[in-house]
Image 1 (cartoon, rainbow, N blue to C red):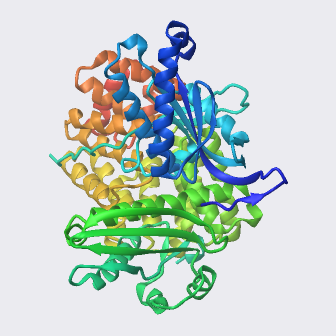
Image 2: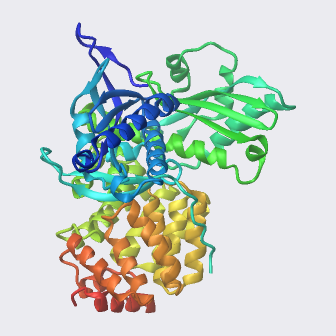
Image 3: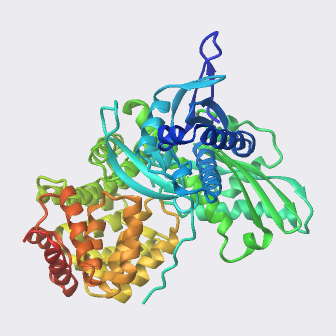
Length: 593
């Protein structure tokens, strides 16, 4: 929980909280038609929420709004889980009522600093949550970008990007997301620079109760597997378990352990074994501030931990990775660049770059520039700066594509001069040769070397697969992109993976599967113009001509200068069958020649 500091004799405190606003849709009409009945229903629901729902998720009823509620939570996952339960309760109660008498709810969630009193909450975070609520339709929940950044897509919620929204009394547009309860994920079958990475230590877990044979080894297995999977991340340095085992049974503070291990984050916790049931409680602490930035409890069977799928490990690692990224993005937004650690600047830049908002995208460039000033010879910021230039061209935001191509190539060449075996630098160099110089032979060599150097580099496999798609090699494209998704199934930039997998299915003549992936990608980030182009092609190939024309309208709204001639000039696939077929589909659906 964030620190809270008393600020006056009125018992007002400051803290970062998750604020959930619940609002009754058309309350005036409902009360006008049946005042006593509606109030009785509403008060009964409020009582159920206050006494049954809020205690489950550590929330409190901060204020009753007459026809709504202001609810306050320690963190966003609890607020979201409570919102889903409230949503189900409302739906269950409405099932027995005629449509005109149903009480429909809309909700908004924001995470922000607020002022807390015993019976109220004040501040911009409350105002933002209220404005987000106004974007929600009946039965819908809308959250801020800061709230969405602390959720793991598909595990915590299904997320749909609403883009930049203009809200009443807020000058700048606000990025908003519609969320729904998480559901089963579709399974598609195939046809050197540690200073620039945050470091994390997984300290030994404490056994609370052991009623199963061999339970004392469970903590060892759990820590070992978490470290193994975390080590695949290109965005974190993981301290070896041989180093962290030193602290077993010793009473050290977070600061002392962090100082000994030189770690920025500590993951610790306890576990309990009861028969075949395993319960794990974990905390992620920021060493510098001593704040617990994430905590959660997981339950699984012993067999699930020891089995091949290891879903529990995947959930833990995805949640930890998301929490670290969210923390670093918060850090770069709330502090002046000169005092922010280089790894925070780099991670913040990567996260903002992939939001596909022009304002965030330009801010990412500022952060990358600051990192390069501090570490001009390091391959990571050079590689990500090259990636930024490629995305700038492909998103249609450049005013000089040739200049961006030259700068991108210069960045990756400098990165490879420093470290010829950096899989990230090799991958991005392949990306530059794919999209900028159109030297697909060099790109193929770079991707092959990248996966040879690091067989677990998901992005290298992903872009290698996309190159196959561009060159009419659909089966190979599917195999490589599916391997990439398997290596990073809960990637924070999953929309990008889904789009390139959809491209592979289009190349293989399977637009039926491509369209599902494109829809999923657009639900997570509807500002990605590449995904819209992929969607148009899939829709046209399936004979969904009206839908394709509507998608082209949205595409041209985001990229008004797009033409078929321009598309073919920059498309790596222009000389191949796939490129010509995709260009014909785009033109037929309405992209100007």
